[in-house]
Image (cartoon, rainbow, N blue to C red; front, side, top):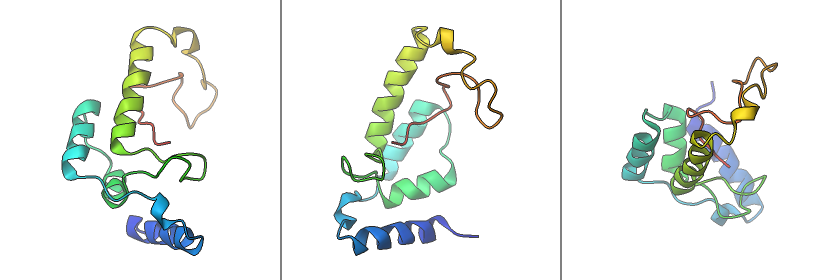
Length: 116
């Protein structure tokens, strides 16, 4: 089985080969991860925690489809989505993805964490 460290090494090798390694930010602090866990009310999956300790996101446009969010970016984006959810903005989308067995129905779920 491939480890998170091996996966990140492969990603870093690709970025380095393109002269783009500087687009990956340094790792997050344990304190930042603790704050994120406090916001979501549960521990992060070990693989995600390890990834964020290695790289706290990317620069803007530094990821394949834009930006890999930093811990601060995840917290900011999640707060926006939670405010929309709690305001009832997504009430008419409760059955969105209902026919997709791999995805929980709805437009947004409190257990989800934005990554990019």
